[in-house]
Length: 370
Image 1 (cartoon, rainbow, N blue to C red):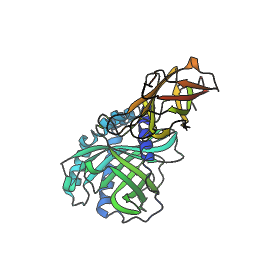
Image 2 (cartoon, rainbow, N blue to C red):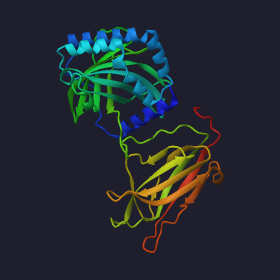
Image 3 (cartoon, one colour):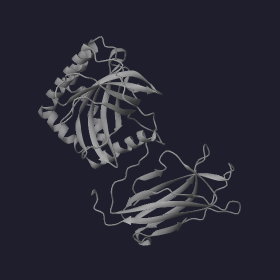
């Protein structure tokens, strides 16, 4: 599994984790799987065996191990056009099923700061949505005790939402079906406070998979253009040769934005000119004069880190209140260093000043090592 894909999937898992959705406890399935649904999944698994064991399928799936998210997304979008799945979908659309979507997804598992699984797939319309629409999706779930990143199998699903309406939280509950070794089945529900409403059924086939899915929470994202301010923010960093911690940020004097005597503070950090990471990822920290934010944000870097501090202002745009340039030569291993803004943001009417404390905690780390 490509390291870039692990990081991309982990960012979706982190977004799901940040949602603070209600915890789900063991629950009874609202219904089982009908005989016709079982027939559909039996045909889907047979079609997958035919495809995956064909020369084309073996070549395609071997290539998946070296793909990033956008490449996997582009690949799964082609699956409904493979001859064996064209026939399968045509047959499914001829049935009198209550569901509106049929999905094919590749399942991945990895441990990268947090344990997670992700299913990247494509949904096609059936029933009332037959032939009308399709959408690529990613279903993220947090899990413990996962092994090194790998493709874990394939999932097929029947859902009562049209493809473009699949996004949202789901709870999977084990179905007790005799489907054979390495195949699990579950009914999925939408969470609405403490109520579970039926959403769909799915089966998953994979190497080493135990029978049953138990209880699993997941969130389905529809993949598409997220615009200029995407809801998905980068969280997980690739490992580099050095690690520092932005231990704390001090508000010596806040910016006077006309909205009170405190700033809604957040910052963006960038190591070696690479990805821009916001922190807090989906929030801010309110600070008054003299207050200290013990932010404790770790940053992997090779040579330098740039930090920009903002005062969040709704509607009028965020104001920069501090910029910091940190280089390896300014740090000493194990010692805290205080940095002042590289630009003076104070004026005659606004004495703005922030400082940050940084500690270099690890050096000469092997990239990708433990």
